[in-house]
Image (cartoon, rainbow, N blue to C red; front, top):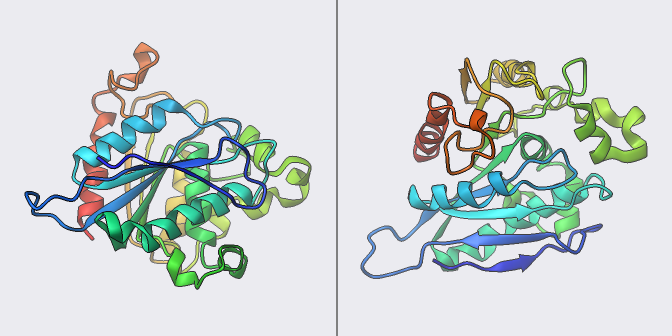
Length: 268
C-alpha cells in the first residue's frame, strides 16, 4: 500500500490540514490496473475530524478493491470555503497525480459523515461554481466528482438543523448566510449521483436532513439511492466493533450500509 501524507494549502488552511493516501501498490501480479478512488471526509461538527470515521473507512474501501484518501480538513476557526477548497484539492490531486498510482480519473467518489457529509454535499452542489476552479487554477471539469456518499448527513439549516455545525462553518456570517448552506436549496444539474443512509432514531442530526436532500435530488432527477434504517444513534461509522466507542454504536442491521455503498460505487 502506498500511504502518503500530503499538506493541504488552500487559502486559510490550518497546520493540521493534510490528505492521506491509501493506494493499492501496482503489481504485475494484480489484474486490476485502474481503481475507483474514494475520498473520505470524517465528521465532527466542523470543530474536529473524527478518527472513527477516517482510517477505518479508508481501509474498508481499500479492502473492497478501491483506492482511498482521507481529507483532514480545516475546521473552526477556519470558515467556508477553506474546507471545500481543501476537498477540491484532493479531487484535483487524484485526477492529476493519482493516475500514476492506479487511480481511475473517471471514477472519483467522495464520502462524508455527519458534518463531513455537509462538506461532501456542499462540494457536490458547489464544485462547478467559478470560484472553486479559480481558486484551484484549473478547468472546472478537473474537479467533477463521479458520485457522493452521504452518511447521516448534516443538510438543512432550518428547523431540523444541527446548528452547531453551521455556526462553526460560518462564524459571524451565520445569521446572514446560513440559508445559503442549507443544501436542499442548492441541488442542481451538476450535483453528482448520490447515495445516502440515515437511521430513524438519530437524535443529533434528525433524519429529516436526509429526507429533504432526497426530495431535492428527486426534483432535479439526480440518480439517488437512499437507505433508512429503523434503529441507531448518531455517529455509527461502520456500525460494528471496529468503530464502536460505546455499545450503542454496534447496530448490525445498519452495518449493511457499507456493502450497499460498495455496490453503488461498482455500478459506475
